[in-house]
Image (cartoon, rainbow, N blue to C red):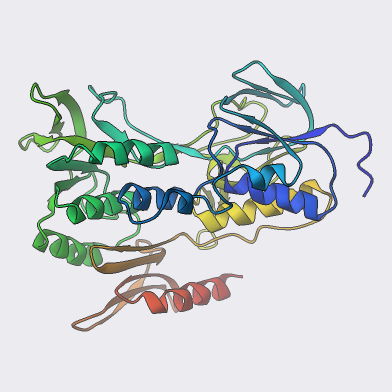
Length: 394
């Protein structure tokens, strides 16, 4: 591999995909300068562990799979530019510029900028008692808020993150209401029949549920906390704090979409190459192949970010490695139950249920081909079902 005379490699983002790209480059013998740009200054962390830290279930260091320092980068000879987001990526000029005015000329670039929580711009959305939950910084902020002993919390967004926050508040003895504009919990991952069982269990534990209710505005209460208004015409919800788990959006504001093709995320081929020569993308900012549909979509899974980052690094180093695709799936434990949602639970031709007093399983088929499943408290079967789906599709 002759890379002499080449310019540096720019990596935009300092998360999991960036780390795996760096490791693949160095393991392939690539000795070019690698510059990593990060909007934040913390080491790479697992977003799914942030609520566990806020709840006091894990130590701070546990959020960081490569250690709570920047050693994973510095040990691989990476030059770090942290605490300043990238403001411009010019494919024509082959440069990256960050908010501090530093500009780097690159030979190749990986966009691994991740995604950020999305809070719709409803009246009051910027209030001080509204908290997103994704980053390690979000977890630190929520942990500090919990020290003030709130009595009631409102969680907006019946997602996997939202339910973990419901669990957090319930465990602390804080009254909690879960609201969503969707008609049920886990609207993308759970079939209505399975969702109804989960909702019944939550109500029996004292969790208030409010569905088909989009948030319309939030006002600060004179005595502290917030009052939230919803689109369902019902009474407002009052709480000491509001957790916004409405969704995330890819961090792609610095790209020129006439140079790099993007939709909900950056479009890539099976080698993680974007539409711009020499520019790759990986992780939550890009769209990967959904094996079930054959379409590109953002698949926000930690394992997916690892895989895509490594594949990008191998190809940047001159090897040939292909991304085979992924099946969207969700596995979460909360409130004493396990929920597993794998594959497609809407577009099917027939279904099959296997239920008893302690387990619930619902399988979805297109013809004779398994295309998805919902399970409650069947965690041990999850890997088997996913492997069966992948085997059918590859």
